[in-house]
Length: 220
Image 1 (spheres, rainbow, N blue to C red):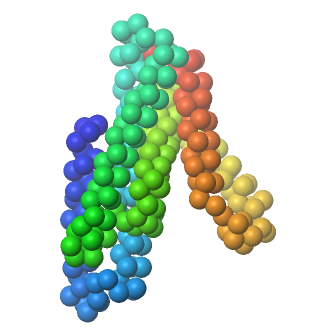
Image 2: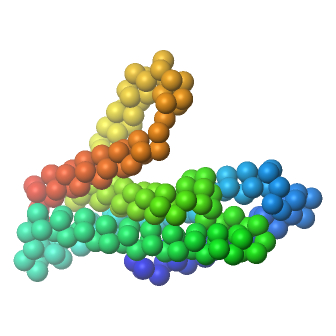
Image 3: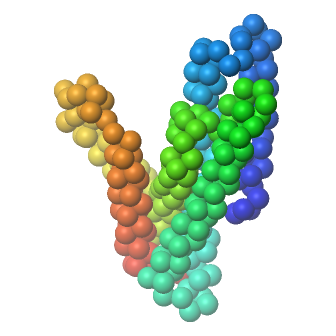
C-alpha cells in the first residue's frame, strides 16, 4: 500500500490525462502550439489525485498503529518521531519517482507526442529540482495533516477532528480577513519559496500537535 498504490494512482491519472489530450487533438488543437502547451500544463490531476490517498495514509499511520506500537513498548515520543521519519521516507520515495518520470518526459520530448503529464505548472513546469521539492514538501505536509487529525481522534474521538477542523477554518478566515485589503500586493510580491516556508510550518505544527494529542491519549 505504501509504495505500490501511489504508483497505480499515478499510472491511472497518466492514462486519463493522455486520453483527455487525445480528445483535444481530435477537437482540432495543434500539439506543441502555445495554446496546447498552456492547456496541457494546466492539468492538475496528477497532484489532486494523490491528496486523498496520502491524507488517508497519514491518518492511518497514527490512528491504527498507535495502540499496537505502545503494546510493543514504544514510548509516545518515539512513536511520533518514528512516524514522522516514515512520512519523510515515503515523501522522499515519491519525490524520487516523480522527478525520474519528469526527467524521462523531458528526455523523450514529452513522450514523443507533446504529452504533458509531469511537466505541469503545479509540479514546477519541468524543473527537476522544483518537482522534487514540491512533491516532497507537499507529501510530507499532507501526511502530517492527516496524522494530526488522526491524533485528535485518538485523544478525543469524534469531537477531536471536528474541533480541530473548525479551529483551522476560523484561523484561515481570520487570516483572509486581515490580508484581503493587501491581497493584490501580496500576489504581485509572491515568491515560490513562500510555499516551502508554509509547508515547513504545516509539518512542524502538525507534528507537534500530533505529539501533544497522543501524549495524553489512552490506549484503547
